[in-house]
Image 1 (cartoon, one colour):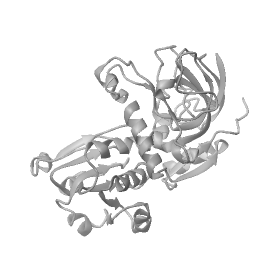
Image 2: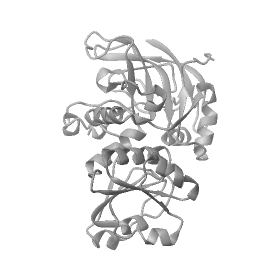
Image 3: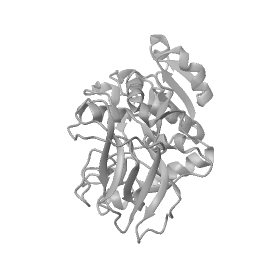
Length: 348
């Protein structure tokens, strides 16, 4: 077994503290990654608060360096810079896996943390740690010329927004709305802009309007202004809803053009409610998306490399992890926290 150190919640809702644990020895197709940066995602907060899988080591947006490779690995060498996301294995045999969409594995994909790895029976521990061991198939070369800290959030927020934008045809001649301008929303805005769509940012306050235009928005709608919101009726081919707090979908369904799609990628607590006529009139669709498989993730990284596209991040030393989580819970970040994992915490 391999020794690792990380930051763990020892019970639900507890502050994270340094913790030592074991990673498996490398299997033939495994790589070991020394983690240099790890993004902080709102789903980490939810897992810390509600998961019964303590001790819980969060983190699923990682960049780092290969330190060891299994004997069957040919794509990577020691010293390669790489990225790892929120899925680290799957059955490899079901129809979604064979299509390269392992995030919908019928067995259930093996998540980076909070799961049990069927290969070794160990609980998965996330990227707020010194090292990760995983199959080479779910490891990606870091795009040349892009900063590793700013790439890390692409492995969750980036792929989560890239996949639906591509699937529902964001591109030239299409008008796309982005609801919310946080960790997910700011990347959705950048990606939709570089795909060539006309992009409109929905945000609750005027203070983000100039920033939205800087990131690529062609127009900005203040969603708390009833007149502005009502004026959007029938305007959009696709709306991507990235908001993680409870809100009504009805104004955004009304803003769709005929045959338009509202795709939800944010995860508010509680159920969503929709009036049937909001879908029937105009033959509209409500859809969802989450993460992506290996083929989609590689395409996303290639796209971001071509367009020099990364997240806007605030990097903090790993010892300030609880500060990052507290500030993220208050939405006090523009737009994604990333932990610098290179100064290893002392083992308890």
